[in-house]
Image (cartoon, rainbow, N blue to C red; front, side, top):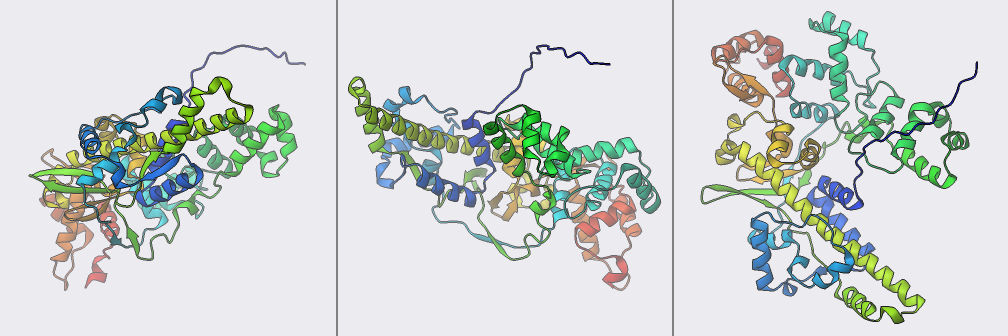
Length: 489
């Protein structure tokens, strides 16, 4: 029986990031140390981008742009080159983040920050970014503990449900576990929690924040021609996709960039050695108010090369009489100037987004920034910050992923300020961090001849208004690195 092929047209709406937006996204993820390297690479690659000396910025322009920075007014888009050439010599050439530095401390802030962070701890830290109940958090921790060294979840759901019931006394369903696995698969790096290599690669390509003109073909290869892909039957795949060899070369490169072992991206032994952390943000108190600044001590001032601008103006004047070689030179210069201005604009947008997100974090956690008391940290998840900053949750995730803040009370990773919600017996909401602090305080002041058991700690917390189960106490105790009662004698 033959099948009849039917052609049809379908209107779909898709969103694609422009190259400029993609640059902003990539710059947003970089901590200040990597941003410095990225700027140096851009200076080497683009002759139209140059460093400015302090003498090149007039006091008048400094005051004007500093005022703009204080009002959080930034240019969001790259201007058209033809219309913008005449504007390059005005104050818009001066990046806001450089002028903000004039009010900030000039010296480089380097703070030793050492400690061991394992693969599982990095994933565990991401749990607080999601609005999970205490029970769901416990199930999620079990799923993270079930991942293999590659970051894949090779156990079937039924086995996980049975193990939770038999060994941990937790009754759950296949549907609930599958739902939580779906949440786990949104953790960074993408591909974590996949049930197979094929699903791992699919998750990376299907990431909403992954943008590429070859994304759909690459997904088709992973979903439909995976067997041919793992056996490297490239000609067969190209023929079945029905695309040119040139386009397939890009699809192939896209596929080969995927990480088949996302667990390795976190690194089991990451952070064993003492590392020097340069904070991305500096929060200080001025006149009783917390002030947020970006730490740009080593970032160079940038401007578009005057020589390139002058050349373009000269070419514009004589455009009708240009030779072919001169026209080629004109196009080259215009491309470089546009790229240089686009990079400067992307840095401005990065600064605006970072300051917006960090300002919201400081506002939400204002009590902590007043006295540094961890017990005053409020429950906060990514969604809370995203809504108040007017950005997407993925943007907040990128901002907080690998950055630190220097406060009057020490240096903290931005992840430190996120935690889940716990409601006490009186209906008041608290951060889980407060319970951990109470737990540590109880253990620090216990009689070491008769240390407190988890059951006793649970009862004492209940007396203080926090009805926490014994197994939850054990979990928090382990997270604090505290041994069981008989080991604390």
